Structures are given as C-alpha cells and as structure tokens.
Amino acid sequence: MGEDGKLYIIREEILSDSLKKTLKVKELLESGKVKTINEAVKQVGISRSAFYKYRDYVFPFSKFSKGKIITLSMVLDHMPGVLSSILDVVANARGNVVTINQSMPSMGVASVTISIDTQYMEMSLENFLEKLSSQNGVRKIEILGE
Image (cartoon, rainbow, N blue to C red; front, side, top):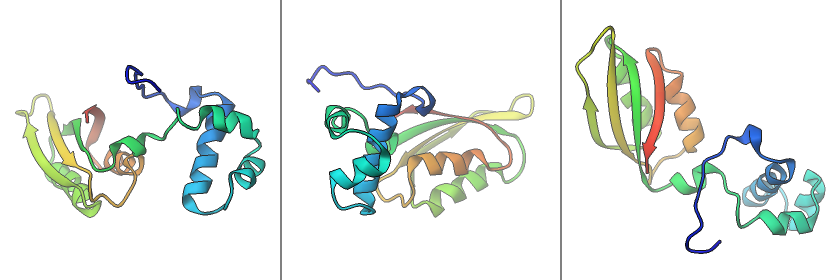
C-alpha cells in the first residue's frame, strides 16, 4: 500500500470469500494452530496466490486499535449504576480511561463520551465493544476516533 492509501472499516458481511479466507489464514498462523502458510491455505480452502495477493491489505480492526486511544460515544439510560457498569467493563478489560464527559440527562437518556487507552487491554476491541453493548442501559455505542 502506498503512503496515500486510505483505510476503511468495512463490515465482514460484505467482504468477498477470498478476503474472509485470507483473514482466517492469518488468524490460524498468528494463533499457532498451523505452522505453515501452505497448511493454513489448505485448511481454509484458498489458493496460496490469493492469500499472497491480499495478505498485506486486509486486517482485523483490532490490529489497528491495540495500544491506541479510542474515543467512544454512548447513549445511556439515565438509571443508577449504568455508567458504573461501563467503567467496570473498562477496568476489567485493563483499559485506562483518559477522559470522560457526560451530558445532562434529557428524556431519560444521557450522552457519554469516553476516551480509553487500549495499550494494556486483554481482550480484542470487538469483544470489548460487545461486552459494553450488552450492559443494561446501553442504548448505542459508536467509535468516534482513534
């Protein structure tokens, strides 16, 4: 990729099979479940040439988020303990809150923006966001920036 190459976040559902399989091969290699590229491409069902064509251009989102500061925008129900449960998830994942801002509640909800240092997090960003989303009182979560 050239220096001017743009990066995009794309939902997995719209990726081609070749791109999905390339990601799976990379995952197998990184996890140590297979020892060689040849073994991984055979297991996944993709040609080596297709893997080599895409391997330097497709990455899981978590690859770019580890060790960076992410900013999340959330809409939370205005109920006791909701923000506290969010902060517990951050702490349990070993994230470090850098900034936090909460709006005045209106119509039963409050907007919260949290910047989190992910350097020491022990779970993937995808799992972290799923865990946050599953907390009672969380209506919406968006990644604003990194």
